Each structure stands twice: as structure tokens, then as C-alpha cells.
Image (cartoon, rainbow, N blue to C red; front, side):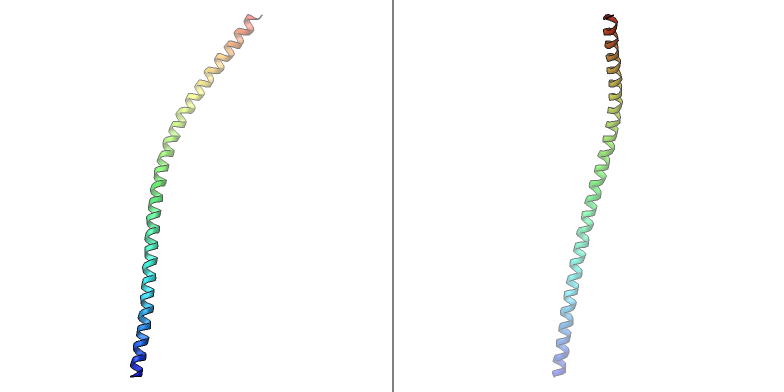
Length: 90
């Protein structure tokens, strides 16, 4: 009888350890799943940011052309005014 009780005790201990291991595996799987979801969300946000960055690049490109033209017009007008001033003060 004692050996059967010892065997049952060992079986119960092994079942308890097995239950703990299965529980730990389930926790790890949940963490992996949550990490995967976070990565998916971050990848989506990165894609959105890349799209917005491309849009901004286009806008900046257009603005640089406008600024260059405006700057040229300003310097042409400025040099014309200075030239007229020098011409009239002679």
C-alpha cells in the first residue's frame, strides 16, 4: 500500500509540474501574440508616416521652386531700384 501511495504522490507531483509548465507556455504564447500585434501596429504606423513623408517631400520640392523664383524676382527688383537710385543721383 505504501508504494501505491508513493507512486500516486509522485504522479500528482509530476502532474502539478506539468500543469505549471503548460501554464507557463500559455503565458509565453500570449506574450508572443501581443508582441506580434504591437509589431503589426507599429508597421502600419510606419507605413502611414512614410506616405506622409513622401507627400511632404513633394510639397517641399514645389515650395523650393517658388522660393527660388521669388528670390530671383526680389534681387532683380532690388538691383533695378539701386541702379535707378545711382542713375538719378548722378
